[in-house]
Length: 151
Image (tube, rainbow, N blue to C red):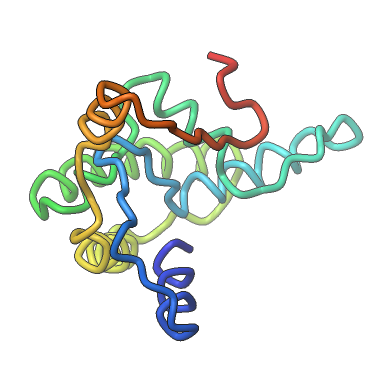
């Protein structure tokens, strides 16, 4: 996770003073990973070979406009409300469609709210930083992963 990577960097003496995390970035939660795994298993011989990291289900939530963003992790009430709604839906899916164990709200909430508190110093509106750099004629390096810019 990001928090573990930050701890590793700090242990290695690498500064993270210039790290910025978009407040609009979507968060992959345990129910995304569980759903990814269950969907892949349900395909049997027709598996697509997903990494089981929850990326597809998180993107589905983004497209459905129910995804939880980094900014949500910083506000206890907003995060609790959005997590409660999303988890209730996912748990119904786990139980009814996949005959799988539902996930615990409290465990997820405590873990991810704590993550939000650990990274909040890095969270900002990165579009302002990007636009300021472009307006100043600076070079900007953009890095993406598989499937980036497809939408």
